[in-house]
Length: 373
Image (cartoon, rainbow, N blue to C red; front, side, top):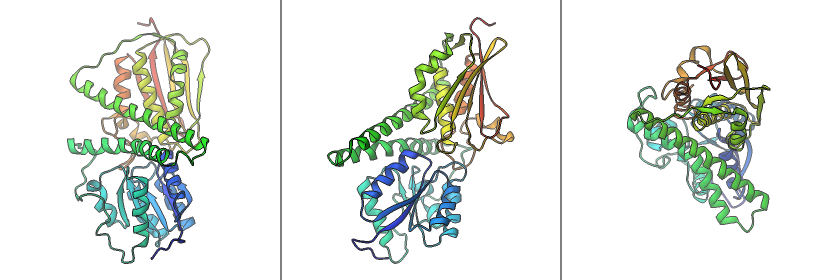
């Protein structure tokens, strides 16, 4: 279809990162061509909303919970054949680009593209009249997509790049908007942009900490210093960070009165809690509560981290703690968080397991009380 200065297109955003959706909504709304009609936080929602709204354009992430973008893509086109689906992903085009085009995507763009360039590319796509995709993939195309169960160095680099690109795209995008529109942006919009940049910077720090821990673990250079700790004080110290990392999910803490001090390495326990809260936020519906509950059990202290997501099937409650294991192929993350949680808990004479509670997933941390044998 040909575009004109007054042409407007309806758009649907599908990404599991709320900050990226907010950034995309802001960028599209500042143009004269796009109206965002709905947002989806997973592939299943994207299919349902595409069927409901029949948008002209759908920006689709690949790595999402419940149903990933590649699985959702043909279902979206079946529900809304006229929709132009543009895959906007953190994976390099060489890894997934051709597969997305073969499945019916109009184009494959890598995250981190500057806002102005993104709008130009989308207008080019919406204005194409021949449906060809000769220039639809940004970057070289490689048909080989390796399995997560056999991670090569190249695959590992791709996964790490994807995990880092999401928060970097948020930071870079909002930073560019602040730089270009500082004088015209209301104060509340500026503060919101800075807050979201800070949230994603903290998440980047979590990713880097996990990668550094893996390197130390493989080289035998992990130091653990368990000391008596007041769990309540520790949680107070990480409250702001956990709340930011929860990405819009309220964090509720329940501490049984009279909890004894635990024996743990404070920095390592913070790393465990951070990974679990990040996971809970990633796999839970927006706005649902993440609960941290602590109580005594003999000479131990149990800490539960509970979400209201889809839960973890019984047959996967052990395998998810493996290195590079993810709940679903194409899902979010690189599969290191839970592996690291188990290694850290064991190093502190503790353990981590998954409870039987439903709905949602409950991760149970078992820690020794200070002075226990």
